[in-house]
Length: 187
Image (cartoon, rainbow, N blue to C red; front, side, top):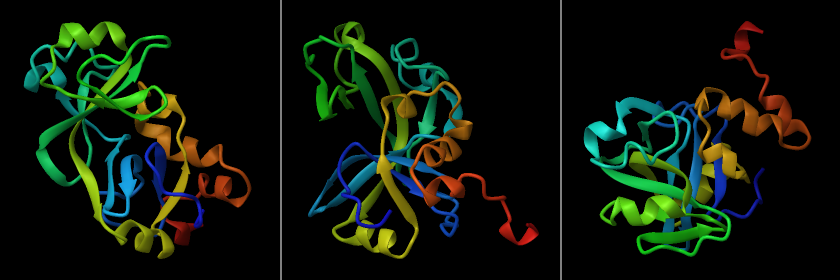
């Protein structure tokens, strides 16, 4: 979907030609995109490491699975949290809007102040980042499809089928990509 506006809240879906193990079959939620570059988190890679094991107090706030997600190869020792405000909730301190009710959560903010305002939350170890113009080049080269996100994409209990499901709901030929075999040469 070249030509689709790259902006915060959109999804980058890895195309079959993207073989980098950090991103093969990944779905990335863009958290920020402007003339200086882009930043996002891979939303379909749970790590298996319980959040409660590394971030005291947040384990009971995050959605199932209650594990850290591998957000990307940049700063994997750091954590970014994405949250969804409950309808009608005021923005609590420690919440920075991305788009609509979706926003970044400051993990240094008191859990007890944020938890009541949140409908969903996910924590990512690391992130994906692109310098100015880099993402646009990768899109033009055919490495990424840019598609609209839906809130449930970010907070799925079972993210294993997310890549196929996101593509399946797209219009036209893009939906066909969701049925490709793992090795097209075997087809």
